[in-house]
Image 1 (cartoon, rainbow, N blue to C red):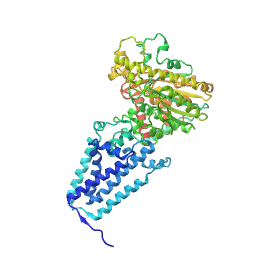
Image 2: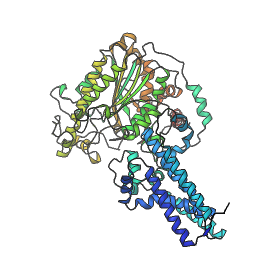
Image 3: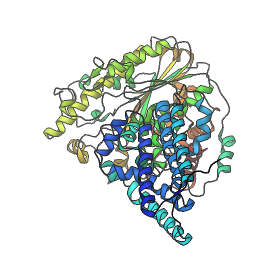
Image 4: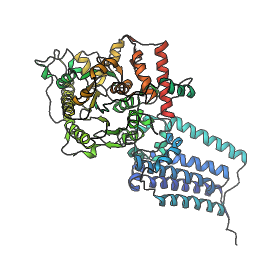
Length: 617
């Protein structure tokens, strides 16, 4: 056989080939991204800075390969394989889970392969063929074209310098949040859309250390595993097997119960129906302390469902859902073990806060989003109304009759912003004992219009549940207080103790929302709700949101299924509130302190360690 012809390249030719190959490799990576190639290419080219940000990592690995192999084409082959392959994995993950591929997913490859059989994915095998052929062509060209010799000391020094520059770029360029946010994206919370718009390589490296899960100091995996048997309670099983219907009201609060509001009759209060429900002998109510003020709906979802606090994950983590990359213990798992069907509804986009993917990891695959609604007729303002939300929920409860249900739902109508444009008219402002500015009146009137609809909705839901023959517990709560203007504008003008930092009680009030647990007629016909409620000590209590789900399990008579849930019900008696956002803790007797020690400190340590264990292991 004849030998392949060999051509020796000079340094200029080598540099040109390296540049061309890097561009081709990046073009292939962009081509593999979801969506139209021309659109992705246009998004990058029209923002010139995105070109080097996406091309640089390809160039780094190509140059390193060149110095290691002393061959332009052989050195480029690994980068030509790896970067398009990463983009390919991103394509599959977006199509399968509506979520982009991030560095934290690399450690979950085994789990991804195990769960892949449960999805009907289009594997786009022809793309694999293109990647393999492209890489093979480079390897073949390496036999034909030889590169100039370079002294080993030069190769070593240049390689080291390249690595140092790349590591510095990760720290000071790719991790730069201000730079990342300087590129306008229409749907910033739609992570797959952001990746497609700004380029996979740039977004992937930006996410390298974006949402860390900090390992607690002194963490001992074996000690946590000892707690599993230590805290697991005696297994009980409720004869009632009630449906559990949890409804989280967007920005729902009871601020309109404050004395600054002046009502001629109770019916004028926007949350009159909610207050009525609280007075029922089949209801208990209190307050929960959440992770955020004015935003962070998903963080409250995380806290409630996992029993672990967002604000303990890491100082750098602001969105708990972004750390969920694998199966994560939740209330849904506990009820699944009890033979329940788990259900989730949010009348918004499935990609918002990555909910579709996260709830699958929580063990809830029965999910309902805005595509189940009539987007023209089911809205009040620009969001799905609470009225339409209730109608859909009733339909889904009826459809699933016969099997115990664990239902976690999130209303959306009263999401900010609270200006007159939200509804297209000026809602009335409740009577006040003080004067407030026009801007504050605008915020307050629009907010009260939404909170009234939510109050009416939850009252109507409770009445509907009373018509069912299946025992049901309704759990309703607010996700966070509303943002009613910059620097707590409306709260300040109303004289409410929210947004102040002078006292522990003021700081705590900023993160406190109401909850109510209501038992329908069928439930009370089978169980002594009042006695169970008194035993749990929830009525009138203020507790951290991480305790609410566990408390519902105790109230319904389910213990011995999850040791962490049983631990939380014990911990709640000693340390009912841990407001980590502002270093406020509530002791057993209701005292508020900024520092804790002894038994309370040990509870905090166990929550911290157990959270890390459940997220990582």
